[in-house]
Length: 150
Image (cartoon, rainbow, N blue to C red; front, top):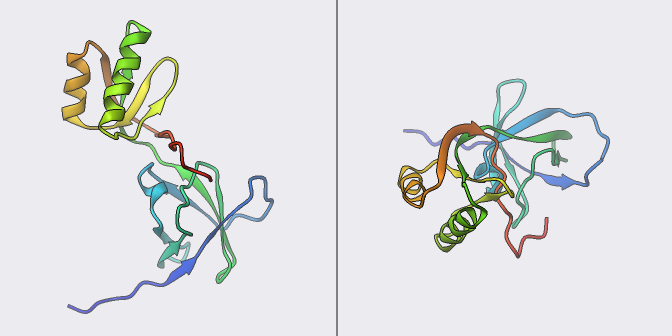
């Protein structure tokens, strides 16, 4: 089996509001937005890899510039299988956030609901705690954490 090396290009995140013609869109899940090396298919059908600086976590609507090819790409959050958790009482939702945090589960937090990546075991745990768990396809924006500086 022959090893085929894919082209890799350095990419930088541009400041919000940078007005440049967009070459393409990177549609990524929450987990993919945390990766340093991202595959992207050009309009010509070529698959290339975009290498981001260490520690970058992409957000929806971020803009990337790839100087070697003068590409400007917009990041779009891609819907993915998630669990949306609701509670009849705010304290139940707070308890769920505490237990999921103890398990280091990436979590999107709002006053009305929590969202996490689909996981059957966690869904069962949350239902046993008296919460309503809905499986759905949605964009997922987990909290960045205390030490994130993007």
